[in-house]
Length: 113
Image (tube, rainbow, N blue to C red; front, side):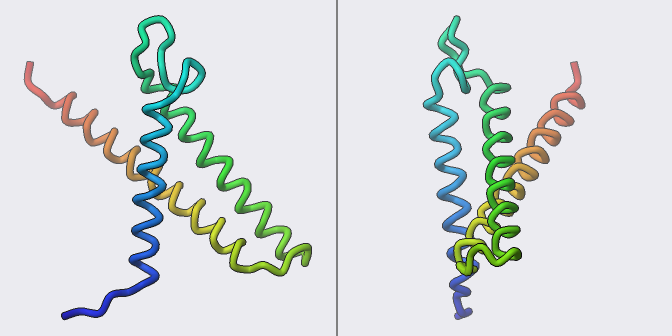
């Protein structure tokens, strides 16, 4: 049996929870973020835009906390590293979603008519 790397396991758990939370938010949005108010159907563009804004906000927050730590305003390295990891996971998830969308687009474009 192989040993279990606890940090990798916690990262995977965190990633799964973040993805689940993002999917739940995208599915439950009101007219402003993810649902077309005229037809009551989910608006894919709005959901993606909202998710990208959340990733950008998380990266900004991580950057601000890192700068505050470097200036000496805070000594809590644990919270700084957690925020940096959250930003990293959000960015990686965004890249993976982009890759899947591009792959699906290529598959559709290569379908015979």
